[in-house]
Length: 299
Ligand code: NDP
Image: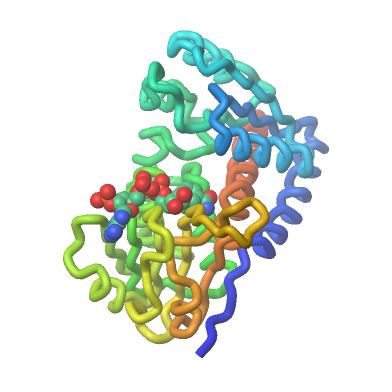
């Protein structure tokens, strides 16, 4: 068996086309969605991510408001900026790129963001609403995974899903999303982590495996149930002297062995990665639509 690819690049393209229509409809009402992107310091990976987000805004016609602050920015200065953005009516979404420098308390910054502008979906209010199944912003990477599955026609209802990784930005929110009584969910969800006994046996029981560990090519094809669906969230650099940059990107799943056992698999790169950014754009547009709804009294 050779698995069919679940191509995030194509699905993200489809979502971008839908977003363009939604943005055009908002513009007719005099609203241009706005995203503030805050970067503190010069972490190279963060600079790349922020650049990609700003480029994506430009392509879609979302107003992008960049704030690139020096590495020595204090917590008080950052909180002042966040509060100013909370009050700025041109801004529908606020994204503070993580990680932040050591002198800044990340939790305090996330909690300062107005939950109505929390397009990254990291605020405790957003996550609480997610857990109880109330309409909210879905955190971008888990939302990307859910959309990939939904739009690839993978029906999760009654299926056994194993998520490997329990981080607050991927594993935990995703587990909560997939067990909701809702379309694209209704799964029986297991979360595995580094203390899980006999991970291969846990993975073997899964109809759908989501790998979000940060361990290159850790999950082997032999662990999978034949015909399982595999979503690989991992992005890891491994040295490769043959590659132009001296490294290549691999996921948390050993692709060559998994592709022979799975029925569908998302590649790295080109799988979950492109979905994360498009879900950030989706949340920003959604926030602008909510603003319009409030303005028109819910009509
Ligand atoms: P974290 O490091 O925060 O969490 C990793 C999780 O994996 C932890 O729960 C850890 O367990 C678990 N884990 C690690 N090693 C093992 C193991 N050997 N067996 C079982 N579980 C293990 O990572 P993130 O959630 O932030 O990211 C995960 C991966 O996803 C990374 O490669 C990251 O680069 C990628 N990523 C990709 C995104 C995208 O847009 N494509 C966005 C965000 C992340 P424990 O809790 O016990 O330590």
